[in-house]
Length: 405
Image (cartoon, rainbow, N blue to C red; front, side, top):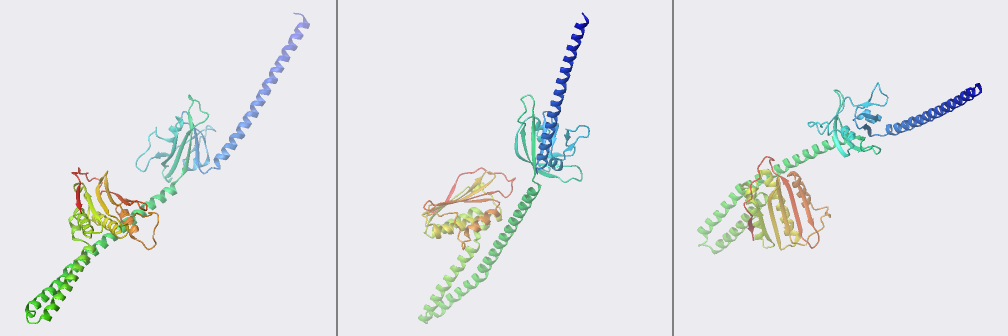
């Protein structure tokens, strides 16, 4: 190779090297610019995430946390690793379904996110380290939109609902307290009715019976001698008999003695009283062998049916009404159905407390009252309520027993 050729080749090699170096420098510059843009975009993304009240955690397919915002650090205990700038971990947070049931590793939201699964609105208890208060979190899991089938990962979003959960628990506790208070108040009312009915029956009834006997003796002694005395004594006996009937009806309306014989006998008596009035045909369907109520439940069910039948007689203009009580799942179902004129159940009279009292008694039973009615279509009142004891076995029904006229 001649000197001129060597110089030409060296020049060409130098030019190629310079061109390659220029390309490398340009690529390095572009990479630096792209990296800067990526860092700025990541900084913007983190700023947006840090402005959120909800905690956000992003995991890869191995379950490693690759991104977390400040709310995640505050609520879930996410901590940035010291050795890696883009790694977080949860050193002190464990998720539980409630205070007694921890989640398994597969059920953990981070595990679901790593597998690319989805979950909506799960409320979990996040238990922190000793001295750190527990929190209730509403957790949502979504798979990463950019994750390929072979490369999983997901996003966990959780919001602190501790205040709402505590408020709900306080509300339930207050409702339970109110229900127990109403239950005790109703029991006290029933006891007072029982006491007044006993006093009317024993004291006033005895005095009226004694007065009637005295009038009978006076009639027998002085009646044959004086017709006017006989007529007066007979009239007074009739008045006393009328007062005795009023007292008996008053005692029965306060608290019928059949309530002490169980709900079956009490409902049969009530249905018979309504049927005897001749205003409406009344029938009872009762699976008595499968219905076992305690004394408080018996009183409440009786008063519910009594109020329902009173409304039917006064307002429904019905020809027939049916009362049924049967086992329903783990509890009971009470129904009162009539073929009357019906009404609009959404309308409430400001002076009517009948339906309000029925709702209160249904709540005291721990049940739900449902009213279905419309003008001209009759009315159906249904009350579903639990058994007095959850462990009480359900007896097999032995057929329907009908009573009434």
